[in-house]
Amino acid sequence: MDKILIFGNSGSGKSTLARELCSSKGKAHLDLDTLAWQPVSPPVRLPVAASAKIIECFINRNPGGWVIEGCYTDLLEIASTRATEIIFMNVAVETCVANARNRPWEPHKYESRQAQDANLDMLIDWIGKYETRDDTFSLSAHENFYQTFAGKKKMILSNDTRVSSH
Image 1 (cartoon, helix red, strand yellow):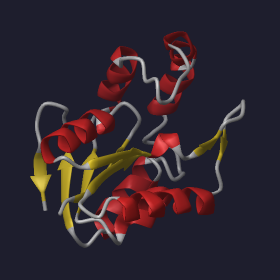
Image 2 (image 1 turned 45 degrees about the vertical axis):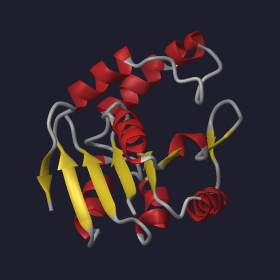
Image 3 (image 1 turned 180 degrees about the vertical axis):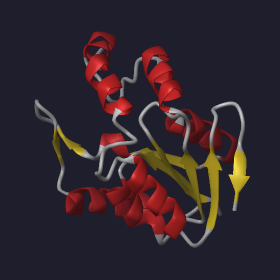
Image 4 (image 1 turned 60 degrees about the vertical axis):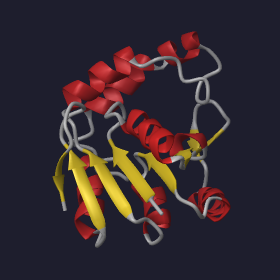
């Protein structure tokens, strides 16, 4: 019964890997982007307690296994006690930027391709600050989450290879 958390910078390949794993293993998929934000402009984070309730409902509805993915360490921690494995997509910032530029339209996040593209410059700037930010989305938060998780873990350093299992 696989219960997997996938995390890393935006554009690192989290969603792609999650879809592959869910398809091959028949697991439910939760993209934390879909529950982390209030539907207002400019975006405002949903209170963590409200997101936690949604995560708990998802986990309880899918006892046969799941894949949860996102860059929100505070939300990943909620599911970490029930996870059987974590995967850290620790790929280069340049790769994340290239992936963001080339990603297909994400209709579960944006009402149109134009709306997604209008957000691209902000997203690329945000991706570029991954190594220097000090927040729940940062490299330092992800490294700490990875180091303190006691279960099975894997770090992926490239979208082409899967390395460094522990």
